Image 1 (cartoon, helix red, strand yellow):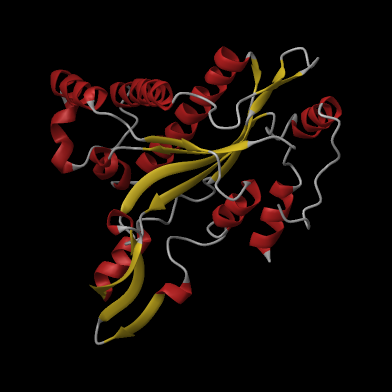
Image 2: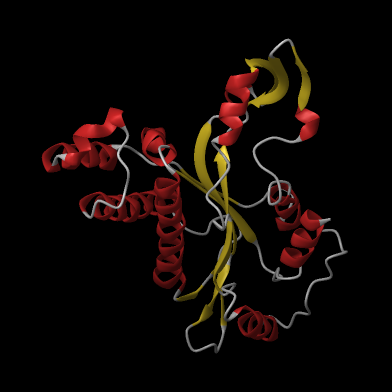
Length: 277
């Protein structure tokens, strides 16, 4: 019920314009640092939201000349419950002019250059990470103890700056409503749904997963119970940490006013959440 309510509320916010699905992913080299403590999770996953939002907002201003609107949803897992920190974003193709005088249309097949998004996202995240390390606001795991030394820390960050960071951007194949349905599946549960768990017997958990590297084929994995629980608990976030956040035109403090203005400019009525697209 809660999931259905969330999806319906997001569908009511849709504008009659194309939408794009963006994914911003952190490199796995950061996993030990993120997972080491709740303090680290709160700081580094919060930084993931900040770096992604600043990147999209800046591209909106630079490429479109206005204010874009988007929702970001945090996922921390892959299909086998391993740590995989990434944000899914749904963004309207277009922007509201700064003075509110017009709607600036974006493309239908292309919104922002992925390489440019990746470079800016990487730079903003690593600048924030460097500041957190310098100000000793993170707990350092034993395997990364050399990061306490400035020279080692700079060399480690330099390697991360040279690595390509994965950013994905594509128009949702079946429309924004279906993407919201997909994202809504995990707004009120964590990592794995009950139907994927096939059995729990003799200290072993058997479950289904899709192998993204093998044509998205459905496969079965078997884990010791302790390992299954360990993987699952990695995705329980710090208390009151917000996994869903809205930005730009959809920021809570301006959303109602800005969406009303956008619909006036687009000569559109609020969408009926019951309609299928």
